[in-house]
Length: 173
Image (cartoon, rainbow, N blue to C red; front, side, top):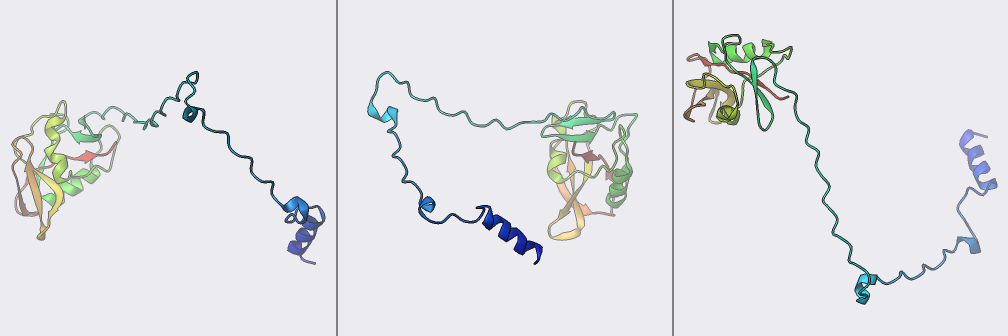
């Protein structure tokens, strides 16, 4: 005999199989008591509505030295004297961000177009004037990317290898 057969025999012999006979018939359910709120009883207070479940919000750690924290959470390189933001072509800027280490944090990246537009909301953000490279490609020509002036909001596209602009790296906390 194989193990599954032995197990089946043991279950059946011990009463582990499906119930049969009169004990198998379920008892009819007893009627539920009426809701006391519906009877108009004056001495019972109505139940308070349930509070919605709170969504926990984790607070990110403080930004590393040389970076600022934006909300929603995003660490942005500050471009101060100790952590300068170079002017490079866009492909060289992508490499620069991947190799950047601020406060022991590595693997930074170029910001997308919308992230550059949020730079003005960061505390301690210096040197916002001038165009900054983004990682956002131009939809009509992937050889071009968006450049954004965070201070004025002006933006346009340009070939990635035409002219150096400010490289300011970002990373999610």
